[in-house]
Image (cartoon, rainbow, N blue to C red; front, side):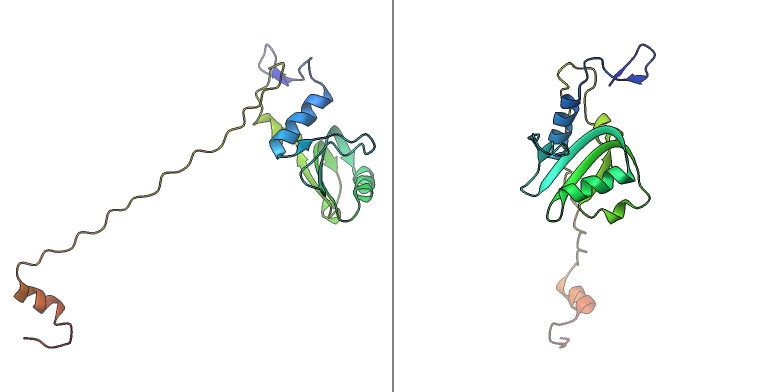
Length: 155
């Protein structure tokens, strides 16, 4: 995406699906390794954790089919434009995120190479609190009157 002459976001004419998938893999911490046999497998985060990026609006039936293909023992992060499902919680092996929330804030749009502007938050400086200053006691006789003797003897 890039801004047009009126400042509106439009799809970059240089855009292609592969650029988006690679960018999302990088932003989400996945390795871009598209599968030749599983259309929903664009990359992996671990041996059992995968990512699928699509600009489609996914229906409940599509999510059900994907969930069944992923199967038990594996998980899939789906980055999509939108989805229509009444109960996405029933797909325990799927996690869904919307593309605008995930990528628009993190990418530098309008570059041919889709350079990423991923930044770490600055480290906060530790709070340094001053220790309260102890009251100065003028002499030891006043001190024993204020605090008393350690063993309860007052001399």
